[in-house]
Length: 220
Image (cartoon, rainbow, N blue to C red):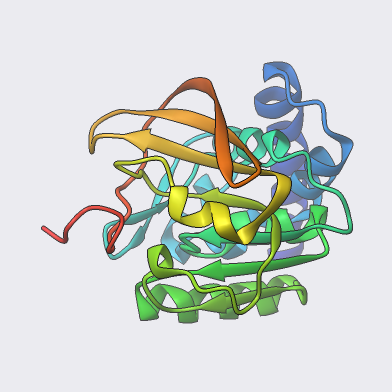
């Protein structure tokens, strides 16, 4: 029974890459390789395991979600990561995006404001064998320079403003990908940090749960 399940999940993962990623324009070999090998089912609640490779977001508790595979792949591809890069992530959730980033980069520093989710992510990453991603629990919008500078950063929750508070911690020429807008609709922004300022390109409409914190939304 368990062997059949593993075979089914491997097939589902291959089909996810083929039909939901490659067919929709994802081209990065590193991203496709990560998405094709990382077991997404580890990062979803057990009762949703059969839906792990569907191209849709899934609830993970605490009003949070794991993003749909295409969005995870697209945002990662926009960062143009290399194996020497250090990446900052705001919003760890269950840890899946961090695992994908870790496969494409040297180190990932991920911050989750909800302690229970941070603990879940650490456990999921351990089970998945990811050793180069560290998870912290605090308000990520109050980032300090302790582990900076970063080559790239990603927000996996909706920000009401461009995350200019991150610019001082990003290397010159570094990239940030962030959904920016109101609680109902956001635009995915690709930001290149140059001499402490952000050059912004819009990369389509998205919808994420909100960033909660000093530079995010207030808790409802």
